[in-house]
Image (cartoon, rainbow, N blue to C red; front, side):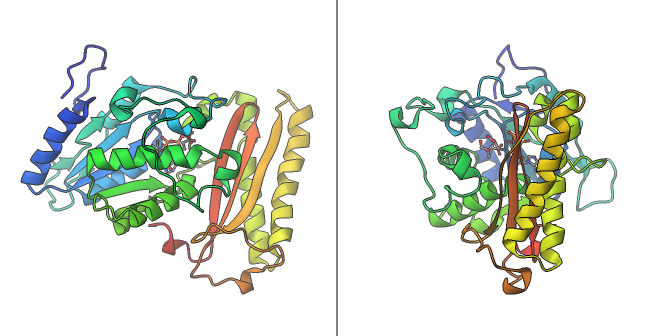
Length: 343
Ligand SMILES: Nc1ncnc2c1ncn2[C@@H]1O[C@H](COP(=O)(O)OP(=O)(O)OP(=O)(O)O)[C@@H](O)[C@H]1O
Ligand SMILES: CC(C)(CO)[C@@H](O)C(=O)[O-]
Ligand code: BAL
């Protein structure tokens, strides 16, 4: 366990080295205790906590990693400014507890058991540069599944995510792991990776996808990057979710894929015009709105309608939008949502 001077006080053990974590993990193996795992980049919010709560409900022990992974940021992206709030993250985790599922004794609760907060060198012993052409060492690519949706705008993102999550799974050795629907392509791609690489910790059926937590007042998906939003940005930010919902209603009322996407684009365009001239003069730019098969990630054909699609194979309706200098993503699922996420 780390006793590093620069770590904030915490009731939860914080491991900064693989060796220290492994000792703890071996004890859990010996004692036959199940370990649930939530991977994060910190700056925790209720969305993260909803994943931690799922883990607490189903596992003896719950580990959370906090690691801002350089490999998933392109050189022009926001690695340097990404919010880092470890003391506050630990406060949130220390305050979290759920009744123990197998007893009515109110004194027995489950709390997060450990935090893994490694250094960059610990995670990348061969070193890491954000420029893919210059990288050396071992990287993981999920071919055919990383170039659509988010991958179109962030071509090296999923390589960085698949690589770090493989490392985290090798380190943590989770029985169960929990990812958020907000990053739906990431979660589904990782499920495929776990299957393709014949991983045991976790096995593919033990990678759980948890619904997106939203601001109850306007539906904005909770996200660490929301911290970048100015008050005027924040007023426009729910537009993406509103646009996706407009497209969803159109689709469910019989519109084609192209018509549904057009509905979403119109919602963003209207908000863009208003935000440009309104108080605060916010610059809104749609990056993409798309509909993709949740299994293959292939783009749906433009003329398709909901009646042409098997509801047992949900469609991902997703998008990304810039609000000022903040890039927001969101998605809704069309069809039998329960086939993809655990409600
Ligand atoms: N609103 C949310 N509801 C449920 N899960 C979420 C939510 N936001 C993030 N997560 C999940 O938490 C995990 C860690 O995500 P991460 O630390 O990148 O936070 P984030 O809020 O997604 O940050 P960012 O702003 O960088 O996208 C991922 O599995 C992610 O999908
Ligand atoms: C899965 C993850 C922790 C890998 O760095 C990150 O992409 C995230 O927080 O979603
Ligand atoms: N939640 C996704 C992490 C990223 O955008 O880098």
